[in-house]
Image (tube, rainbow, N blue to C red; front, side):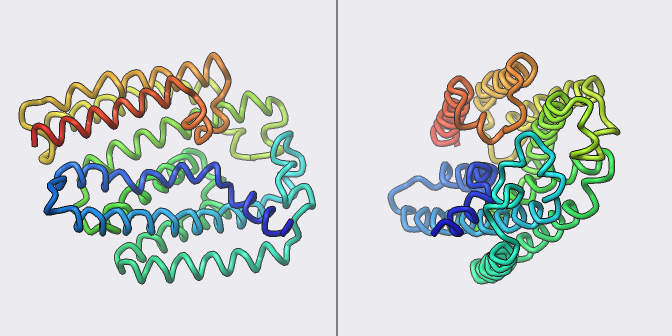
Length: 299
């Protein structure tokens, strides 16, 4: 049982919050089909989205295991990563390889059975993440953009899982927000590791905190502008511009994240910030409730 526990820990369950993006298309679809007569349809959508979420958790878990195997020696020199099961020696290579094989087979086959398009998206995600592990993470700027693409693929997977049209705004807002978060994480790594940064991640030599801060200002502003344009120009939002009432929540979320990474130095684990920072959690909840109310009342 200890081996199973270490495998699960290596799959990074805390980072599965990233896969919650899969439910985003579902949330906006349900808000447009909330009549009692449509409850069976909504039930099928919820089941499909939840299945997609579980499959992506398994698939991303396999990617994390592969990443830990590839970086095991570097992780042993890292002040935090050296405590991971593989780097610390608590987990061996053989059970890790077996787990990777099983996770990849189950997740990709399951994805194809759910929906063949969803299966293709899952395969593309897995391929890109493997390319990132062994090559793309060593190319300046491409490394952060690849991670952002992973977020976009999750959102697209959520739409294909329930077979609803994919809005171009989903692409734009997701990739910009993902870049904003990833850049903050890179900045935290630089500040945490200081002069030892290149020993743990060679690509960090290509960045400086000041450069990353400039990129974050640029991407943060673009994120707010893209979302603002979405609220009054997207086809599936109310024509009375009521969706613009949700802009302050997005603005506060960006400000709060900047505050946390610049003042509190908490940018190393965005997935933990999402579930542990009370003001940010409240802000996200208010955004979801307000958006749902607007879409249901003014559709």
